[in-house]
Length: 86
Image 1 (cartoon, rainbow, N blue to C red):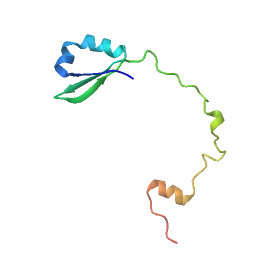
Image 2 (cartoon, rainbow, N blue to C red; image 1 turned 135 degrees about the horizontal axis):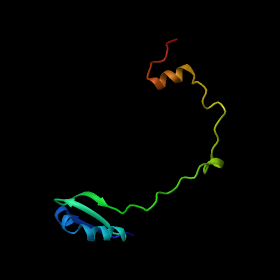
Image 3 (cartoon, one colour; image 1 turned 120 degrees about the vertical axis):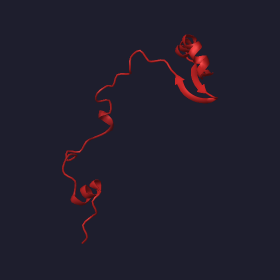
Image 4 (cartoon, rainbow, N blue to C red; image 1 turned 90 degrees about the vertical axis):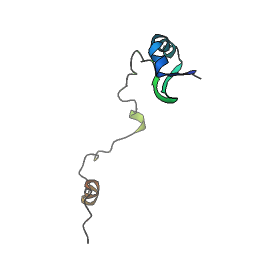
């Protein structure tokens, strides 16, 4: 469980280097104004996680007709047009 450290804006201005060090070592640093939390100081990860193409290949299928036109009544509903009265 991460430790948490709440500081006011003035303290954050004067001790920013120390707060950055705390955040990079796993402490949740929260900056507050008049006791109300405003922001959370978190470290930036070195590299974002890479997505792997096709990782859901075995978990889903796409029908051959997925891009065929919709039936008229359904298309009208998506466009917000009222259905035709019979």
